[in-house]
Length: 272
Ligand SMILES: Cc1cc2nc3c(=O)[nH]c(=O)nc-3n(C[C@H](O)[C@H](O)[C@H](O)COP(=O)(O)OP(=O)(O)OC[C@H]3O[C@@H](n4cnc5c(N)ncnc54)[C@H](O)[C@@H]3O)c2cc1C
Image 1 (cartoon, protein in one colour):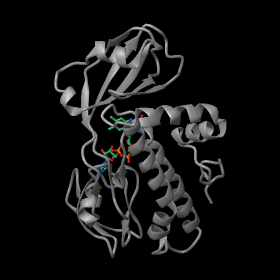
Image 2: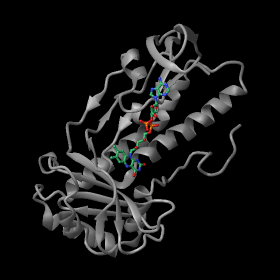
Image 3: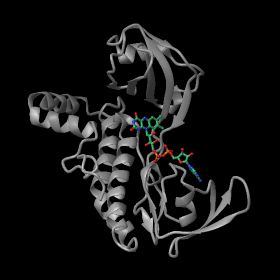
Image 4: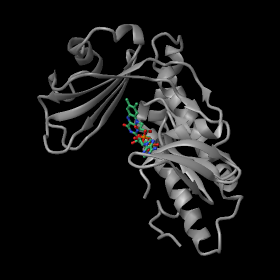
């Protein structure tokens, strides 16, 4: 394994120069170069793959909090009009959670967590909320590449698509990329070389999931945004979800990252 930063890339030939953490720069030649290096992806930038940005959508406040009621391994996502609030249980302490609260950036300037507002917006389902650790802030700015490959370079995960954190879909989507890619590479391993069309086949196969998940995570926070004047429609929509169990199940499956056609790996089929 070579640890270091890519400094130049020729997508057509799969040649990449890597500045090693220790020692001189080395040149690597690969049949397939996968950029799984996150939202700021150096591989994407060096390969010249453009990124389509959706514009800023607030700031995510992240902190560890405790509640007076135990989490019992439950996670909550509350689509409050002040912005979506996610409470994710942590291992080890049954009263400790990770909070992700996406708010309008203008309301996130003060240091610390506005506990009173959080308690009002989230309610008392988990009891009294208290801040436990420091608050981290992340700018929420969804973005996507129109097409994730060029030559022998292919992007997966946040390098290809950065989502709004609502409903926690980002990691799921990246894991599904990985499952499909692992299946394709596994199949290609049986052949003499990875064929040149693998990145394009991957991109075609993943397109529908990327579109659907991006749309879902873009729409969900807007539906509950107090600045969007659709309150009566939202009420009708939620009532319809309650009255139509099939629609409710579909919504829950989509929010859980479960798709109608899971990959082989997701279905437990071992790689070829
Ligand atoms: C506030 C917030 C809350 C979120 N909540 C959720 C959630 O609840 N559920 C969910 O599914 N998703 C959530 N996400 C999204 C999730 O964090 C990302 O979608 C996921 O981490 C993307 O994984 P990734 O591996 O593609 O990128 P990253 O997690 O960014 O990982 C890329 C890695 O590549 C490494 N790297 C970069 N360059 C090099 C190099 N040259 N050599 C070696 N390593 C390198 C980086 O150090 C990094 O560790 C959230 C995101 C945010 C911002």
